Length: 437
Ligand SMILES: [Zn+2]
Image 1 (cartoon, rainbow, N blue to C red):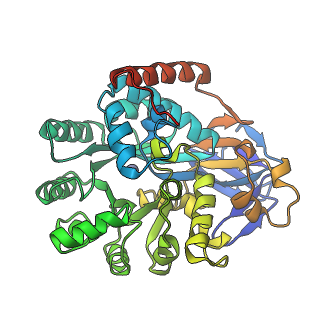
Image 2: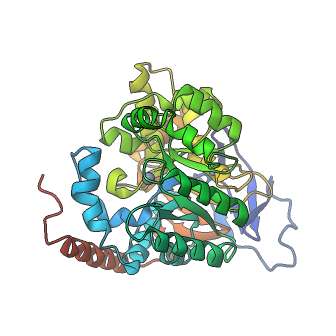
Image 3: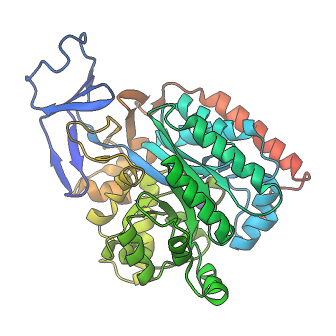
């Protein structure tokens, strides 16, 4: 396939290139060259030519932390504290979760992400064998971690299932990778964290874990264990190259240095923090410390939507508000985080428009009121772009969204199946209303 006529955007340098053709083959970008130089696809038949005139081309966006099937609990617990969110609402529904609910909830989330230009997601949830099928069907790229608490009733069976899934599914599809998913240092005992860390080394897998989501966790950890949650990950062997830390929002400056030294990455999920009224200047601190930060939406049970452009906007606004300084979290610092998660998930070069990179691409159509006029296209993308600007989405060289429409998924069926699953969860929770506002 040849993409012809697009303007190529580069977020880290806030620069653009025009007058180039982008040749895709074998799921990768094969050549970026001025028109007229032919020959790349010779012998492979005539390549399809996609007319991209008037569109902006950029690498696909990465959702670095979600619990995607929680699309089924979108809007089920609002205007409440973190404690009430989990104990009074979410957990009552989640314990009734069936494998088929995860399949349909994940597929719905994948559809939502693709329509928002998200080509890759890191998903941390349950029944991941079914989530794996959903991602495979969707065409998206994903990393899947089966969440394990390491404590409470039946946790050994949950751990055995997670290990079995990881052994059976790792390497089965080059688009889908597998990580181990111990939940967090505030739920998992240290002995289990050590076990999970050792299993990851033995199985050559990365880890995806929550840490330091709120300030209370850090205070309790210091009072009860004499060290921060990040330090617990360090002493149990979890904190190392390739580990993905969801949040680390209340990491201390010392924690941030440790995270950078060990080579772990962080998924920053600003919408969840904002919704819980939790303001902190994590992002400027983490960037100054040189930590690898990607953007995440968190599960739709707390973050509601799955768009990474929205996460970027929230991240910039949150940082500016926390510092009470408009000059922090500048456009050129925040926009690159839309792609950064790809490298944190082990895809080298992800987020660059260059020969050899994975052909995970997004075309934006700026011909909308919210993108007009164009003093600065990068400012428009960060602060005023609407989802309808996502025109085409390509993953591994395959077009999954064209002219704002999903090609391979039946949205009506998805809506129906998701509504059925949501009704099941509501009934299983005791017919209680999801929430009275
Ligand atoms: Zn999470």
